[in-house]
Length: 114
Image (cartoon, rainbow, N blue to C red; front, top):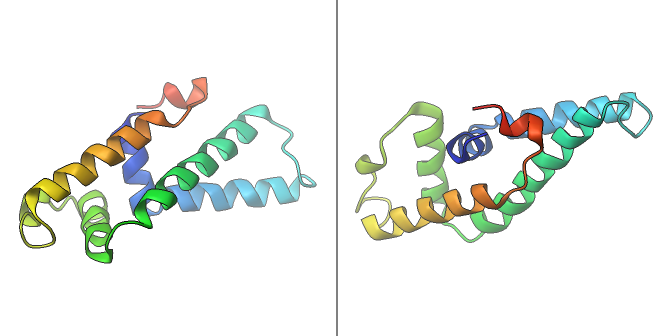
């Protein structure tokens, strides 16, 4: 999965929805997964949350809302330059998000998804 998609899934809520579904499946199957693919997905989304939650805890609510609006509503970052934060800060945040997304280990099945 591309970094942009991982970041987008995190900020739009898809990652939370996927993790809740997998947690429900795990609970239904007696506390463990009967499929290794489900377990790989579950561990992947846990890693996504661990990595991004640590980083976004250091960001202002305005920057988090800007990221959400960009990925959920396709609002260009350019509309937020020097309004939400200085342009350089927004660019640094986006570079760090891309670096973090790239650092997350992806199972082979997830790597194949664009």
